[in-house]
Image (cartoon, rainbow, N blue to C red; front, side):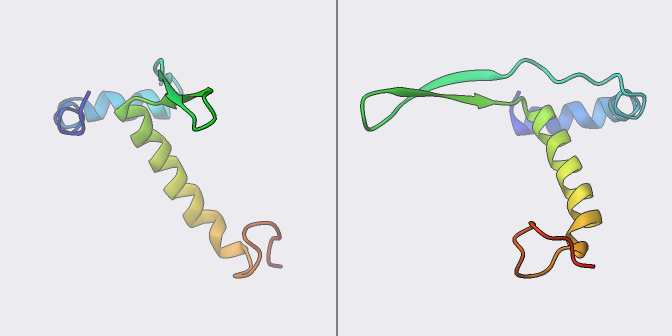
Length: 83
């Protein structure tokens, strides 16, 4: 699903989508695995979530960041909680 398709899908399905998350019924979809060649001749696997799963991840990240970032020291890089 493209971002444009996701936008349309979310407009049409946002109520059911939000309900599935709130009621803990949402499940992550199967990810796309792509092999990428490395400069040394080997390969590594790149795992790509669906657009909808990425939106969920970003929502969670932004919510948690807003809650917890203010507790960290500017110089801690997230290692020590500012008391």
